[in-house]
Amino acid sequence: MSGFVVNVIGAGVAPALFQTLGAISELSPGRACDIAVESPDALEQARVIAGDAPWDINLVAVAGRRKKLLVADMDSTIINVECLDELADMAGLKPQIAAITERAMRGELVFEDALKERVGMLKGLALSALEKTYAERVRLNGGAKSLLATMRAHGAHSVLVSGGFGFFTSRVAQQAGFHENFGNSLIDDGAALTGEVGMPILGKEAKVETMQRTVAKLGITDCDVLAVGDGANDLGMITLAGMGVAYHAKPVVAAAAGAAVNHNTLEALLYLQGYRDDEIVREAD
Image (cartoon, rainbow, N blue to C red; front, top):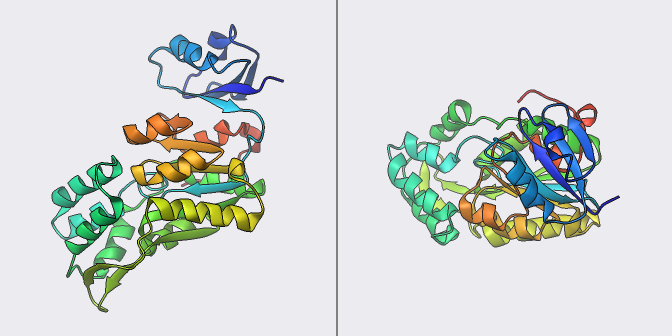
């Protein structure tokens, strides 16, 4: 067995295109396959062969491929929106706050400072806006429930860790099927937000610490972790994990991650681990 596979995922994947690179193993007919390769150089060859096809093509080490711990970002990774931006919309401030969010996610601002600035702008927002935002705006991204159900069925632990807010992580974690969730706290006076965020702020370093604390608790290693996210504050955990995945991510994240998913749903994280269709527990999101 070779030490690596080139994993190809996307609608209309044609395994025969890649047969010159190595032995083909089909994970999902017309959707996902592995190519056993001897050298990491085969990744670029596979991408040349695929041309501009909308497929995600990544190099994956065979050893320890199926991970025992999933650590996932929430906003724009497990769910479809940035919750803070949607709260801003409720306050009539979405353009101003979303612009700061975008810069922070690209790594152009210190996350903690950017979070405090944005939350400060929400001072006076009624608490009912949080529930309204969750009910009307927050949706699981495609494949989220199948990802969680499959990894859980195969014995993996899962943690949702967000620079967003516990109000949302607790609800999203229950909806998607995470074992644990961590997020920041919004301070309120019983009726409205005060414009303050609970300390310490959960940012890039805290995400790494959460991952490492869970690794120690489970008695596993960083190599056993699949970490996924899309913003700069996910970079620490993504680069430390045995499988770090940039999911529809900002360029700075995609450049640093070991794997990137730009064209597919979260089910791609199962194919990256070598799961076949008959092993996937599919649940509607």
